[in-house]
Length: 138
Image 1 (cartoon, one colour):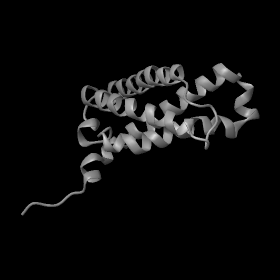
Image 2 (cartoon, rainbow, N blue to C red; image 1 turned 180 degrees about the vertical axis):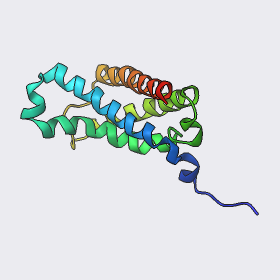
Image 3 (cartoon, rainbow, N blue to C red; image 1 turned 90 degrees about the vertical axis):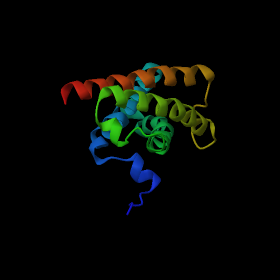
């Protein structure tokens, strides 16, 4: 008799938890570097809420998109060869969704096309490098 599993049960593997933590840190680090480039290091301590709110749209979009596109599926936890492409696929959609969220009146900053391009390119690089390093260490 076959067992029934939900869509998310097929998309989430507990073994991928370290990847999830690292992905969130990589996204937050990417945003932090951008905040520093645009506002300087003092902004981090002078405006911590603004700093965190800059990252929130992308963290929300990553939390929504990454499980749906399999970034934490059983295959993702096996090797960089499977984990990196799954993350890239998820990041492309998450970066666009994050920019859309940032474009709403709920957040400051807007969604300039150049900014979206920067997030796509550097976010892809950040997550890919992180996941590659993870599998070299593990």
